Length: 407
Ligand code: GLV
Image 1 (cartoon, rainbow, N blue to C red):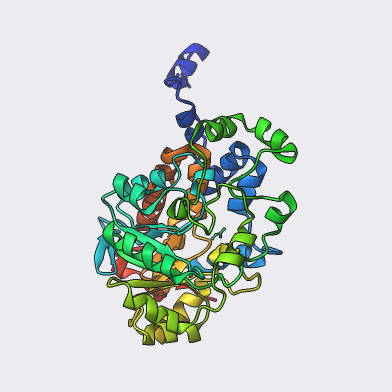
Image 2 (cartoon, helix red, strand yellow):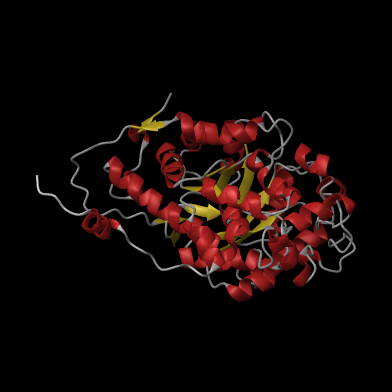
């Protein structure tokens, strides 16, 4: 055995990397997954803000079930299939996207980062993915279009004042939004007990109860007080209330939104909108069939991330029976619990055209702003590519149920 000096051995292994001076990059360098960014967001955001994003309804059983459903289903990888190059590009509503993912609408995105929806829209365009702007956004339909030439969808809630809905739909059309996403699972707001306990309002208030929380999160607090006030940007200055005085989301939704939404309203929405319609919040095979019979272009299977009816079914297990019953009449989007590219692969293999995710990018935004969103969207694409490669699938079209170990 030849002997070498300890110095020689050390010299061969010691490497001093460049010291990262940018605090955001330093933070991101410590994260390898969406779960890591969630932990960073938890540290960076005041408790009330983090819990509003992270929490679900009541016992959070449905929220947990969404992720557990993906965890329960494994893969049946095929080998020796000669797949040299993997291509994850796909199409949805007749147009290309970089990989089968849509960014879900999320309300009040500026509470996670002052750039809010603008940051998410820019990141989505860079990633080649559609972004759905929420009716309850904190940047307006027009402001978001001004920063993105990418695919934008607009999410619609049924305001009691249908004139307001019509006006928003017209604004979305004028700003070249491609699709409307009608949310149908919010007759009333689900009881998010974390928000109830904290007395969480929108915009968040700074008072005796939250002062300490704010002081413990100086980065967020400083950015919050330096940026312009958070408003429900699509209804700025309107009589329905625009957040100029803080409200609880349940008071707002329960007074402003129509709980009596029905299939006729879907027909009405069609009469005021020429483009594709996505119905978000379908949770049974029966309703999916009714939606397909009505000619809805896409059905987003969703329980609102477990934020509405606790006890509603997890979404991923609905994909296969819904795909079978709908038989290609409408495209199917699987929303809820998506944290990894492998979840997207599972949803598509089961029969969805695409997956949809909200919290995944919000954790990135809360942890590291726009670059955090870029990071998440990049990881999901890389994850998906690797998953296909290890499954022996060369293209999104090669994903089918034979690759899933379904219970
Ligand atoms: C709004 O739609 C929410 O889920 O908080």
